[in-house]
Each structure stands twice: as C-alpha cells, then as structure tokens.
Image (cartoon, rainbow, N blue to C red):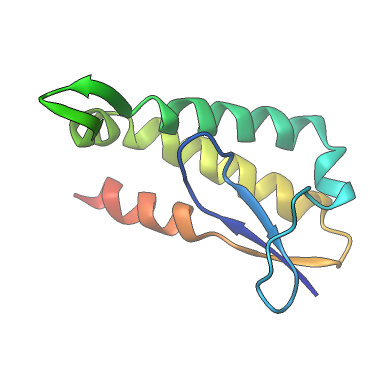
Length: 111
C-alpha cells in the first residue's frame, strides 16, 4: 500500500508519496498527479511555506521566519485540511494518508 505523507519542506510541496517501506517516489502516484485540485493546493502550501525561508538577512545565510509562520497558521491549517480532504475524496484504495503537517498545524493553532 502506498503512503502519502503530508509534510513541509523548502521548495517542495506538501505531498510526499512513498511505498509501504517508506521509500520516496520521485513522482506522485498517478491519481494524485492527475488531480488539478491537489496540485493547486500543494503549490499554494509550498509557496507559503517556502516564503518563510529568508536568505542573507538577520546576519545569517538562511533564516526561518517563525513569526510569519505563526501569523499564517490558520491559513496553512485551512489549506492542509483541504488537501487532506481532497486526497481522501479521490482515494481509490491504493494509498493511506499520513497528515503529519496537518496535525502539527492543528496543535499550533491551539496556542
């Protein structure tokens, strides 16, 4: 069974497709890759999250803007919920979703 992990990384969308052994695929699985709504949400999430990385500022080569991440927490939560919901909606039984980033943002929004 394939695994779709929802996690965040610089210049990478939230969708990480793996096989049952946790080996990452280079390409998303077809059903996800062909879904326009998933691609759109994934790109929005990637764009927002990647914007938190700032370069050559604050006397650092790379600085992560935690303050902005906190300000955007409800926006990111909404997008992640929509993405996970869409993945569950189109699921043909060939994968399970591990909503790692969604769970993180839910806790962040409780603060």
